Length: 160
Image (cartoon, rainbow, N blue to C red; front, side):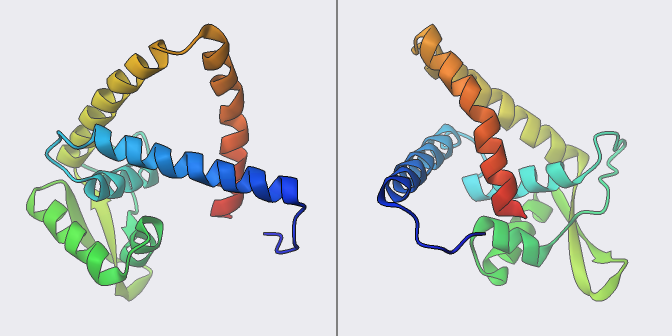
C-alpha cells in the first residue's frame, strides 16, 4: 500500500468512504440483531464458509482457517477469537482440527449446520437489504451496482 501523503481531495474522499463503510457495518450488524448468533459469530462462520470449497459435501469443509487469521479479520486478539470459536463449536456450527502443516496450530472448519446457519442469515439479510434497495431510485440502484466492482478492487488491495 502507498504511504505517500495524498492530496486533500483524495484524503477527503478516503475519509468519506471510510465513514460510509463504518455506517454500513453498523447497518449489517443491526440486520443480525434479531438472529440467534452475534455479528462476530456470523462473521466467523462466513469466513469459514468462504475458505471452504463449494463442492464440500456431507460436512466436509476444506482446510479451514487458522485462529490467528480469524482474529486478524475480526480485529480482535486471539483469545477473543478463540472464545467465539468455542461458542460456535459448542453449538455444532464449527470445529477445531489440528493443522496438518503445523502441529502447533489449529484450523477451524465449518460444519454442515454452520453452513446452514450462514445461508439462513444471508437469506434474512438479503431480504431486508432488498427492501431497503427498493426505496432507492433506479438511477441510485444503477450507481450502486456500478460501484460494486470498484469496492471489490479496494477490498482486494486491502487483502493483499
